[in-house]
Structures are given as C-alpha cells and as structure tokens.
Length: 207
Image (cartoon, rainbow, N blue to C red; front, side, top):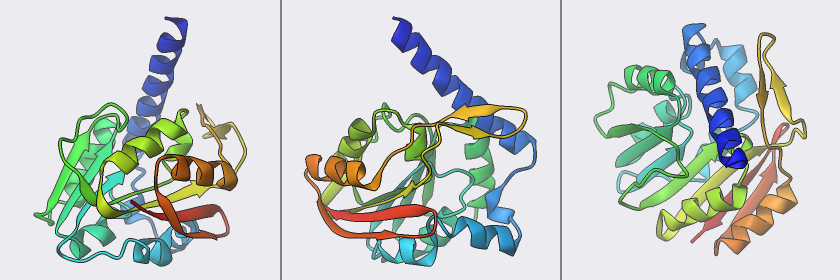
C-alpha cells in the first residue's frame, strides 16, 4: 500500500507540474526559433524521418504535450493519436492541433489507458524519463504496434534524478542507452537504428 500511495503521489506531482507550466504560459509549440532549435537536440527532423510517415499510417505519440512534435507529424500521417497525463496540457494541445481533422487527443496515463487498437508508428520523446517501470512502458508500446510497425524513442542522456524548476523539483528516472536497448529487445522488437544527438539517444525499432 505504501508503494502504491507513493506512486500515486508522484503521478499527481507530474500532473501538477505540467498543469502549472500551462498556467505559467509555457507552450513549446509557440517557442521562439532559438528555443525550438534547442529542443530539436532531443529529436528534430532526423527523429521524425525515422518514422517513415505517409498518409496510410496511424500514429501514436506518448506524451504529446502541447503538440510540439505533433504539429509536424500529424500532417504527414493518416490518423494521429496523442496521449498525455496532464489535463491542461491536453487542453492546450487541442487548441494547437484544432486545424488537423485527423487528430485525436487523450488525457490519460499511457501505462493504464486501454487504446482498443494498434498503430503503425508509436513514438515518444522526453517522456520516458517520467516513467519508473520502463520495461512495462516498452512492452506496452510494442503491444500497440501493428506487424512491421515502428517504435521511435528519444531518451535523455542526463543521469540526474531531479529537474529543478526553481519553485519546484520534479523526480525523474534516468536511463542509459544500453539498458534501453536491452528493454527494446526484451519486448520482442528489432533495433534498426540507434544514434546519438547532443542530449539524447534515439532508437528506431521494428516489430
């Protein structure tokens, strides 16, 4: 019971943090170009190219945020789904992505949400740092893929256990590229590509 309560508290802490970012006017979709270039050091054009998108493909983004990546990927696919745990973040994403009729946004916990379908591409950037049970998350992503589907993941290279935002500190769960590679293989996926950016390691894996 103690562990369950702690997990619930940490989940609430994450939701509260990202809700607060919206209240504070933080929306990466509308960041100035220098800040967008900085964020691209975790993903960017090469990350999106790994998905091999076309209009016949269905896509899921884990941790869609306000739509920073979705505004680029949604126009390139047939159906786009995005899930995020923060209600205010999803609310902002709905505003930012209102012009795309192929977009469905879900407020929920990726690990427990029942999608009721599978996808051609599942991707995530800067979200797995918030997930303690990473093998469970990779297993779920793999299970949501269609046959020959792609899982594209960017993980932060930082080994810190907290992100300091001045007024609050957020607990995160750092990872290593080698550990993630083992998890991806354990989930039954084949790693097609693995490369480093300045701040991240990016994996492309095939089901």
